[in-house]
Image (cartoon, rainbow, N blue to C red; front, side):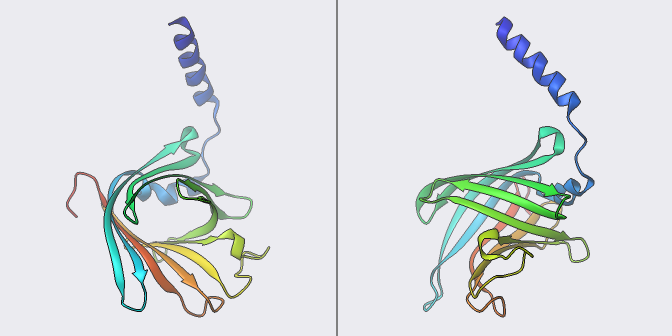
Length: 183
């Protein structure tokens, strides 16, 4: 029991000493909370067949507000699925960075993006398809777009391009509704 009290006291002291978060961390304040999520995954582009499922996510500020943690879980493609995500604003490159890990084979991803306050939209890109200037490096790339952001809902879509970004195809959508609301 005394070790628990010591660890708790050290944790409180460490939290008090953390640096204040970058002001840009508030750009994703709408993201924080518990969400019911309706997923639509493109199964067959030729027949426009989509698989629809319901998932759940919880997003919290961690490390004294210096990090957004996401816990994503539920069925995906008919199978149990779980993922964790870490998002943080990096003032060195003035971008949001995300590390994603999930239960699928090879389920690691590195994303970078930005929030546009004028359009109230967040766009992130899979970093492995970008060059050093953070521009699309070849024909293929992937991006995520958050839009229609309100206090109790927002939409997300996963898009891919095969022509260097001239056109984008939506292959997965998520409609988020804050848990306990009916928006």
